[in-house]
Length: 465
Length: 93
Image 1 (cartoon, one colour):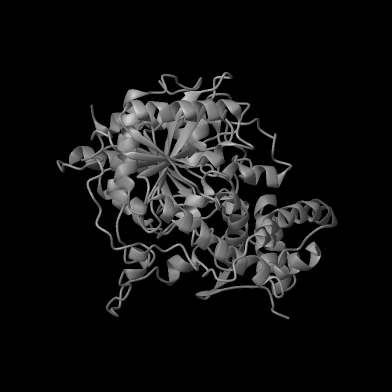
Image 2 (image 1 turned 135 degrees about the horizontal axis):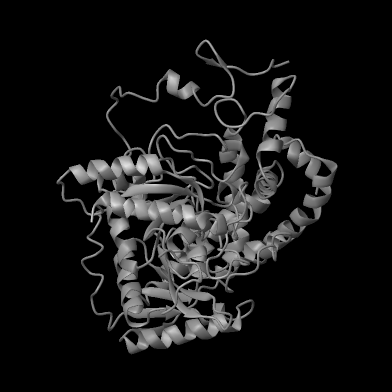
């Protein structure tokens, strides 16, 4: 089979399913087929040769749109490739399209996109999760085997859980963020979706590593993530923070994750009790730090150098105000204003400085926990996929979806969501494994063994042939 | 909470409808985040960024070499308005 055939199939499926799912903002026929023909003509042995991949629309792809799901960047064309894209291209992977997302990655349901919500392929009346919902659905609906997303507070793991696929957030500094449009720089990561843990690991191995163009990328050796993926996991220590299995957790999700703890025992893992006493403050810390950093990062959208500019303004200041008012959507404005508020004179110490201190406590919780265990198990999301519109008028209720995921971003540790069950309504449930800094290998090994022995055994209603 | 003043600081022109929408929502969120005040943090060091110990140790210095960059034409091509190799904006005053 030629690479052109593989890529044509992915492109055709994307075109066919997009009217129902709205997961792609652009489908890149021309670029993708040209690349396929080049690879077909060559004889290089590449690790991801001809592998179709979908990319969240906040990761720069040269010559393609990069809108961040926002009106303010609606016509923006990236002029360079993100390092992750450069590395994927060099390994033979082909970007087939850019995916829909919550505007500037702010949201947990994909409803804040300026280009309409993405639908969950298990039930199109429900959200796919967010903010990387388009990438999650592109994988879950079988268009591609893997996709890139971005994570600031769970934006890969939460939609992976709600769509029944694998979602991975690496250690902060593991993957270069060069070319990832900034939201909250001390929390942002590029993350990976996969139909399987193996596909996820294969992509990670290609895009991980130090990059001179991102000074926060760390100079830590990149191991062969596929080499240890099938190792036995007997004797591995899995920590359970029982206090996090209480209030606010859907009973079916709890039962499913508790069953998966038993399943890990049956695979030979040992279960230990741990505590993360400050995890319950994670959301509060997150919505101070993330909004503060966003208010600063999004100051660049002013209608001068790129993007949308409001028409017919008499003077510069009016142009700034109108451009930002018309260009940004509701959730983005809410977060810019929250960030402006917590950083403003007289409030800085009470909010931002306080949050930085509690962030230290959240990180210390993990440091203590990882003296006792190799990985921590929790649910990924407190519920299965909820209905479109159910939480969109209540921002705080929406923020609480991230209760299990934000702490890993605050601390900088890696975490993975793996499908672990199906609810009585036929919707997928995900478990989350969180690991120590740079322990991607351990997480992928645990996740892969789990997936092999306890496969989900179900597919979404909408799935590409 | 004075949402009108916050919007001004954030360079957002805001409508009366938006003030009515945002004021209760933002008040509720700020009340929620104030739960951090339960914690005694006087002797806790702030965590300033996301970097790991290994990340902090990474040498970010490099040789000061001239490299090609985006270039004027490419840098200007996304601008809403430009003239003679410059970005163009409405009058300042």
